[in-house]
Image (spheres, rainbow, N blue to C red):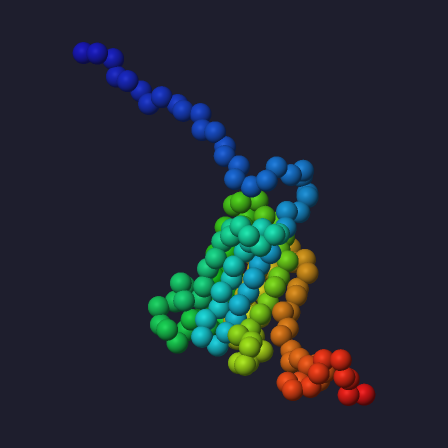
Amino acid sequence: MAPRKGKEKKEEQVISLGPQVAEGENVFGVCHIFASFNDTFVHVTDLSGKETICRVTGGMKVKADRDESSPYAAMLAAQDVAQRCKELGITALHIKLRATGGNRTKTPGPGAQSALRALARSGMKIGRIVLQWSGTAPAIYVQGMPATISRT
């Protein structure tokens, strides 16, 4: 009989997907949290906002439609996003929080706070928190009034 062939030991190369940084240096991304009363989106991009790194919604984490906007679904979505960011080497996030806005409510939905807490508790460092605010136009821009006249 021929001698048995043993399993050859293969050396695996470690693949680093994230940027090359020094030890202890933070790599920032931007986390866009859109919390409406129907769903919660947790979307991480690079600092320019053009390249999507990870996007998870509350509806991707629960089965029932009524639970898409729940704090629990938002927490699960944020934990998935944080795990993916760590795999790619992102250690810190700036937060941009928004609600539906427009002629609808400007108050963020129930998943906003729990998504932010889940990101912080999963080990991500939080940089700036920006509340995107779409307020009403000032009184000078009331329709029918010339823009050069002020009401003071």
